Amino acid sequence: MQIKKLYMIIAITSFLVISCSKTSKDNSDVWTEIDKDTETTIEVWAWNVAASHLQATVESFNKKYPKIKVNVTEFGGNAALKQKLFIALGANSDLPNLIQIEDVDVPLITENYHEFILDLKDKMPNNWSNIVAPSKISTSFDTTGKQVVMPFGIGIGVLFYREDLFKKAGINIEDIVTWEDYINAGKKLQSRLPNTKMIGMPYPQGFSAFIRAVMLQQNKDYFTKDGKIAIASKEAIEAGKLIQRLVLEGIAFDTTDWTGTIRACKTDDIASIPYGIWWGGTLKDQAPEMKGKWKVTYLPILKQGDIKTSIWGGASGAVVNVGDAVKQTAAVEFAKNAMLTVENQMLAYKSYGLIPTYLPTFDEDEFYEEDPYFGKGFNELVPELIRMMPLAAKYTEIFPDTQTYMESAYQAIVNEKADPEQILKYTAQQLKNSTGVDIAE
Image (cartoon, rainbow, N blue to C red; front, side):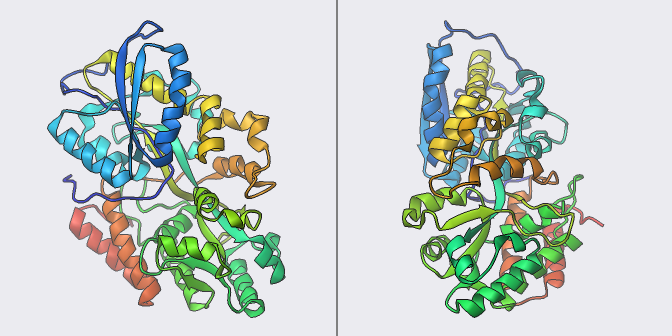
C-alpha cells in the first residue's frame, strides 16, 4: 500500500532496529555471537526523552561490550524522524541501526519494507510473553506471524483529577465508577464551582483518541483482528455519543490545543482530564507549581465488565535484515539492554518518566517509592493498570489514515453536534472507499 502522509502522534516511545549501511534485500535473517572483544559502531535515532534514555543506557551496555560504539541522534519529534526514515528506506542506504517508532506506524513500515525486518523470536528470552506487558504481545507480530517488534513504551489510559477542587465541590473520587457517575459529578462540580468545568479537551482537533480509548475499554479497536474497519461498530458509536454528551451536558471546557490544555491544567478552568499516563510528565515539566494537586485514578467505564483503563499511545522495536550480522546482533542486544533489564527500565521511569513494559521492574521496592508530584498510590496504580490493559489493539497499514478520518468525525461530533452513529457510518464508508478495506459486520 502506498504511503500517503506522515503523521505525528504524541506518545511514549518504541524502537526499530535497522541497518546503517547499504543493504542487500536478498540476505536471510542472520545473527552471530558478540562478546567483549567485538568491535563495531551502531547508529541510533530517537526523539526527546527516548533519546536521552537510550544515551543513558550506553554506559551499562559498554560494560559488557566495551568496543561497540553507540551514536545516539536526537530528533525534535516523530514526524521528522519518520520522514528521514522513509527516504532512507526508499533509497536503501544511510539507515540507522536503532530507531524509535510509534506503535501506530509499525505495520506501515514493517509491511511495506517487510524484507528489511528480522524475526525477533530467536533473540527474545524463552519466557518473553510472561515478562512483558500483556497488551504488547499480539501487536508484536505481523500478518505472517513474524515477530517484527519488541515492546518498549506503553501509553496507559488514566483519569487525571484535581483532588483539591473535588474536595471543594464535595466529590468523592471513589464514587466515580462509570462515565454516568462522571457526568453527574461534573454537574455537581459545576453547581458548586461555576467557573470550573469537569473535563478539558481541545474541540478543534487532537482528541479523537478519546473515542478509541473508550472503544478499547469495550475490547474493540478501529479494526477487527482480521483487519476490517470497525469505526462504525456499536462500541465506537457509544464512545462517540459519550464524548458528545460531555459537551452537551455543559461540563466540558474547550482548551483549543495542546498549549491551551497545559494552561487549563495550571488554572482552575478544569478539574479533570482523561489522557495517557504520559501526560503526567508534561504536568511535572510544565506545571511544577501544581505539585500535590493533581492525582491519577482509573478511567470511568460505560458499563460493568468494561476495562478501567485503555491504550493511549505506545511504542515497540524491530530489527532489520541489513546483511551485517555483527551490527544486527549488537543493535538488538543494545535494545534488549535498554528494554528488558530492570536497571534500565527503572532508569527510564525514574529519570525520564517512561513507563516500563518489562514486568520484573514492578518487583523492585524502589519502584513504589512515593511519587513527589502525584503522591502516594500513583506508583502502585501503574503495574495494576498495565496488567489489565485491553488486548484488542489492532494496528494496520492504514491506521494513520484512519486517525485522520477519525479526527474529522470527532470535529463533526463535538463542534457540529452531528449524530455520532450517522457520522461514524459515513466515515467508515469513506475510509473503505479510500483504502478498499472492508467494513466489519
